[in-house]
Amino acid sequence: QVQLVESGGGLVQAGGSLRLSCVASSKITRINGMAWYRQAPGKERELVARISDSGFTDYRDSVKGRFTIDREYEKNTVTLQMNSLSPDDTAVYYCHVDYGGTWHHLIWGQGIQVTVSP
Image (tube, rainbow, N blue to C red):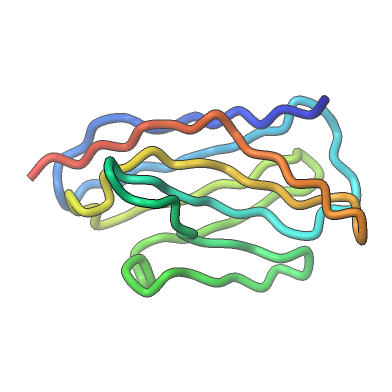
């Protein structure tokens, strides 16, 4: 069973930066896409950024120009560089991977807390 492990979260002041990393516990093949989601208290989980197997990236409007998603398939890693953080970015961030080609196996990380103080 492949597991995703996130790291890099924590507490930062508004305007600061954090870099989240997500590593798979074993080799993943035929990756369709990798993504980061977040869930704030009392809110639904929302897509933050995603990257396809071809490298196409997509971001939610509120993070465009501030967040950058990247991946290293050889290392089974996806990262999220977050700059100019604001308290509205406070949430638990989850890594998500879709792999297996047409089988579309979906796995989630356990989540990591990001807290931005005013």
